[in-house]
Image (cartoon, rainbow, N blue to C red; front, side, top):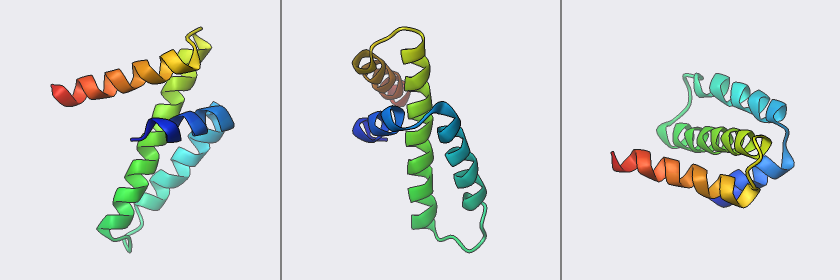
Length: 82
């Protein structure tokens, strides 16, 4: 998960576009011919898209983009430490 990628997605795409991309990637990830490195890349893309959706929600609730991005990364890092 990379905050600059999440911010780029959040600024460039609507939540609906992000959700569509997520649906497509989830379908692609089920393809039996995929190799492990390809699945890892798809997983990273899905993580970044989910992060962008969450940042969108925080911004919609009134938080600044910067604060929303930082809050999201703190949440992620906090869940890793558990």
